[in-house]
Image (cartoon, rainbow, N blue to C red; front, side):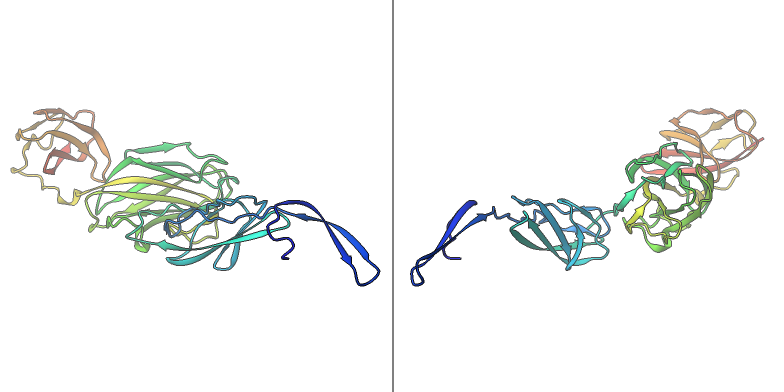
Length: 342
């Protein structure tokens, strides 16, 4: 080995001469290859269940082997991996150019709540076989015909907000994807702690045909926090147990937002309500003048008249006979009153 020390990559002729035995000469051709360098670029922490990319900064490599806790997980240069639990993981990268190899090692800390926000689930195959969500409709959310084979397996629709009353049941219409059968599940972070917990699994359904509508009933607990919280809907393979974060092979995840309303605090109909006449046929008058905006809702939390600037007189003739909720809003509060349309 000492003869080769200091030689660079290339082809060499090695000659061996034995002066003690009739000067026998033996010559061989040898090749010294370039030595690859294994480099792991990941130094930050990871979040449990998230799709995490392992990054190689290696040079001179032709093949890669990534190991997590001594288990081979990928031969790609920069694979995506989902860590199944919180803790410390040993990361090994072995690179080779066919003749020489090198190894890099790192310890990666995987965190959970409260250090990480909502998990971003990882799918190895995603929607390539038609396992997706094609439509979601509830209250003000109408996100229809948005799925597709081969589209990304995670969508952030949290800019779409449904206003739903706590203590009430609400129907969500879900349209299945192109696969014959999938399991769909819905979570609502109704305690507003930034994670989806087992008791926050509010609905699930097993689809039996492609592009079919299914009604999921969402019962929002009376103790739900009256704030805007995330709602997650996931598509799984039929035999997979629902979990808000766990990785999978096929499927899709969509996140929305829900504004939880305090409709259980409605004031009773009577002389103290600042509206008249009640019951009303055509026009409803408001006695209080200090509201910035007003709106009309159904008792189950559907907005029927969007928030508009305050006005003393409201046209309600377009409403069908029944019980409704008038809401008044200003900077510090929202107050609700019941009224009857005849």
